[in-house]
Length: 414
Image (cartoon, rainbow, N blue to C red; front, top):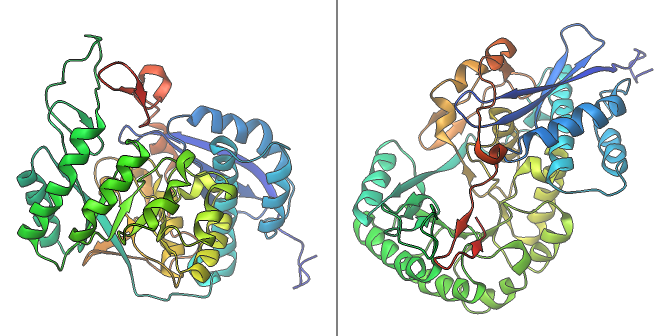
């Protein structure tokens, strides 16, 4: 019996919703209960390996959670987390996230409150966001940034193409000839490292000092070049420099921290506490950038945010197009209740195309921020009939991230 003398509400079913309304493979979990009309949604999107997550959910977590009390979110999380013995990793963490976030949605609906109220309520009126300005030239990046500024956005990530190279965030035109003539995506780090500081010299002169500029390296360069780049960008006062190193190169954060005050954001590829706890504990980064479903979901993210608060690290959760709108709502609810919030990445694409007809209840975006409603739970519904209209598209290699190679044919990190 519950504390109110009522029988507990039990999980009766788990459904996996696979949909790609605008071509991006999204994985959403729906948990149903024995209380008519009570259900919840969670994001389990790992767009490069979605069917592996679906299998983990349908074959392992579904039978594990059926019959459990929906109010025992932490207990279910802990039991499911260790149920595989070998734990962590993006597949199992995303599966856990789908369950965890769906239970939080149910919890909010049971309380008649938005999830953020269950965390102590708002500490800000809305969630400031950053958007993406990209282009093939400095001038085109500037134009894109100005368009966003006119719409009220004050935080803008800027990326520029390198001619002939597959630069992260912007294509560079005709492919530079590689040793293998069949090579479609080529990349060399040195032209990029030389160009990035020139881009921000141009943008600061053109846009002034009041706009917050961000940049994503995306782990693509050798670590020592990353140290040089962070120092070279310091004079342009970025809001943050993202993913300067790969997770495997975490120790380089100690080196770069000793040489520059450029703010550092990291975490998009982390899936395990052992990767990010040392960086936060030793104050080697300024922003934590985890993809919430990849670290296990909302429960883990709120603990991580609380830990970061004591270390002076701000949150900047990953928010690209390959997070479902349910996952974005989890981001926003955590953002609005987190004292050490820094900024939130926002994929504006989900407000256009077919996505709004599948995910009903998208928040309002104005004045460069997301404004949440006071609807219970995440405040969002999934139209399952319409979701079924948009199956996963056929994709080379089943949806894998396309390989990128240096001119000699060496594979580089994405």
